[in-house]
Image (cartoon, rainbow over the protein chains, first blue to last red):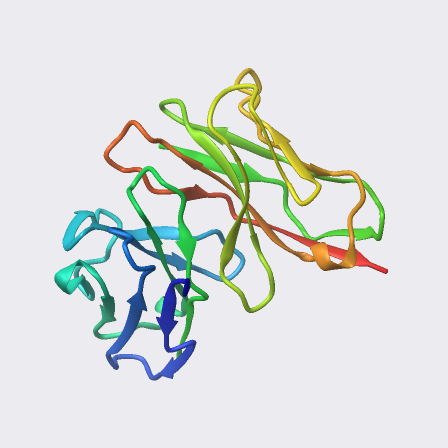
Length: 113
Length: 114
């Protein structure tokens, strides 16, 4: 089966510009996670979806970040406007249920200049 | 809050050397514990896990034992290979809370030299 697919793999933008990341989870996985991984650090949760509902978004900076998961399948994470400090790898993961194991995508490396 | 502390890297070893990467945790409940590995340019992959005290997780020659009394989950391998060079992340997950997301340590880079 295909794994968790993320695009793009790399993105370079100027500060104050918008950017969006896309994630296609494993078929049948109803739980989807977005993590941010700063250089030299472990991933930190941004938001967790169960189906189309965001059930944990307490760590999402809502002034500039937004996410959606239409129809409980694909998800998009958006930043508008981007800041220099947003440079990081954005990881998507999915699982069959919240208590099951995760599968991570390869991530999108964002550089804000 | 919940947290995971790992030994800082990089850890540099010669091939066939013994590996230990220390991991300790702080949690409000009874977590499940995990080791993930990240090879260059790839996503995180689950290496092993343990769900209760005294459980031993093992995979690909790596082992870790869930020690509740010392709140530790150290990763070990008896003989490392060059192909083991990667970043290793210790993580915990509380299953009995609404959060249920993984909390990661900062990672330890392992470099194995031939």
